[in-house]
Image (tube, rainbow, N blue to C red; front, side, top):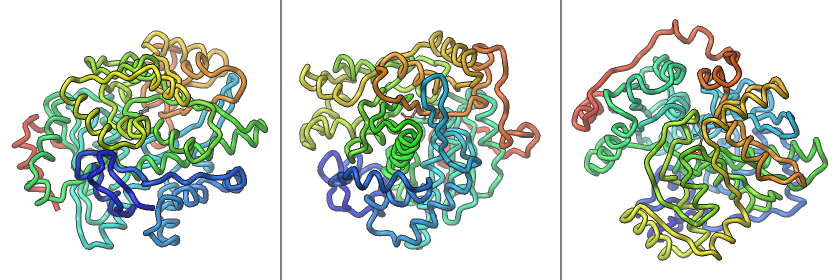
Amino acid sequence: MKYQSTRGQVKGIPFKQAVMMGLAEDGGLLLPESIPHLTPGDLDALAKYNYPELAFQVMSYFIEDIPAADLKNMIDRAYASFTHPDITPVVHRDGLYLLELFHGPTLAFKDVALQFLGNLFEYLLAESGEHMNILGATSGDTGSAAIYGVRGKKNINIFILHPHGKVSPVQALQMTTVTDANVFNLAIEGTFDDGQQIVKETFGDLDFKKKYALGAVNSINWARVLAQVVYYFYAWGQVRKQTGANKVYFSVPTGNFGDIFAGYIAKRMGLPIEKLVLATNANNILTRFVNDGDYSASEVHPTFSPSMDIQNASNLERYLFYLLEEDSGRLSAAMQQFSDTGQLAFTKEQVASINEVFLSTSVDNDQTLATIRDFHAATGYILDPHTATGVKAGKDLAGGEYPVICLATAHPAKFPDAVNQATGKNPERPISLNGLEERERRCATIEANTETIKAYLSENAL
Ligand SMILES: *Cc1c(COP(=O)(O)O)cnc(C)c1O
C-alpha cells in the first residue's frame, strides 16, 4: 500500500514515510492510494479476533513495510496499557450500544491511537537512528494522550503547551504529573489559541523545524486514523454477535472529523454501516456542512464538550478529497478558497451524496445536560458530555431499523462539573486518577511568546 497527498504533489510513498511526514509536504493530508474492499467472508473472519489481533489484521491491509512480528509487538504493547480486557468494550443501555473507548491511560478515545503511535515513532526512530522533538498545543485531551503515548520513549522529547489555568483541573493534573525526563509541560500565560499560534509559527520557521526535527501529534497523522478504523470493525462484530444484525449505525461526537473519518474508511472497506451520525455541539460547522452544504467558520463557543469546540475540522480535507471525486486539483482549489474566504458552499447534488453516508445534528449545552440526566435516570449509567452529544444525535437521527452504536469518547470522571450539574452527583473516579492531586508535578509556567518558547525548546530539545 502506497500513500498520496490530497493535494496531488506527493505520491507513491510507503506507510513508514507517511507516518514520519505527518502533514504532507505539499500542505495536504496523506491517504492510501486505494482502499481495500473486504468481502462478507473477510468480515466474518475478522469478527472472530480479539482486539489486538483484529488491530493487526485491519492495519495490515494498509501497512506493507513493517515485519508482521514487529507490528504485532507494537500493537500488543499499546493495548496492554488499557484497563479493560476487551480494550474497547461494547455495552448495551437504553436501547443503544455504547462503544467505550476510554479505558486507556488518559481516559479518552485518543489513547487508542496515541498509545500505538508512540510505539510506532519509537520503532521508526530506532530504525533510522534519528530523533524527534514533538511540539503541540492542547486544550486538554490530546496533550495528555500524546504525553502518555511517548513518555519514557527513546529518541523522543515532547513539549506540550497548555493554557495556564484554562484546562480542567483533572486534565492539567493528568499532564503535569508525568515526570519522565522526556516530557516537558509548558503552561503558557495565554489562551489555547495563543498556544496554537505559537506552534504554527514555530513549525513555520523551517530552519528551526529542521534543526530540531520537530514532529507533530495532531490528528492529521494517518496512523492515528488507521488505529481508529479498528474499533469500528470491533464494535460491529460485537453487536452482530449480540443481536444478529449485520447493518448498524454509528453515532460519533465530532470535532476535527478524525474519529468519524475512520468510520468512513471502515464503510468504504465494506463494513456494513447504514449511516454515520455526526454529532456536534454549539460549534456546528460540520452539521451545517452535512445538512446544507455550508462550510463556513464562525467564532468558537466554549461548551461542556471542549474537545469538540472546533471551527476548522482539520481532517475534513480527507473526506472532501473523496467528495470531489479524488481530484486533487479541485480539492486544492477548494482548500485555497476556504483559506482565503473562510467558507465553502456545496451543491444540492453534493449534499445528497454527503447524506448517503452522513446525517448530522448539533446538540447544545442544555440538551447535553438533559441527555446525561435522562440517561442516568433511565439506566444508572453516566455519560460524559462529549458522549452525550452522540447519544442525543443517535437517538434523534438513527431510525429503529438497525442497532445504533454510540462512540463513548471520554470517561465522565474527566468532566465532573458538567456531570454534577446534570445529575447532582460526581462521577466515580477510576483507579488511574486516585491520588492525582498528591502526585509530584513537573511543569514550567512560561510567557505566551514564540521567541520565548523557541528559546526553551533550543535548551531542552534532543
Ligand atoms: C478529541 C475528542 C473528540 C473529537 O474527536 P475528533 O477526532 O476531533 O472529531 C470527541 N470527544 C472527545 C472526548 C475527544 O477528546
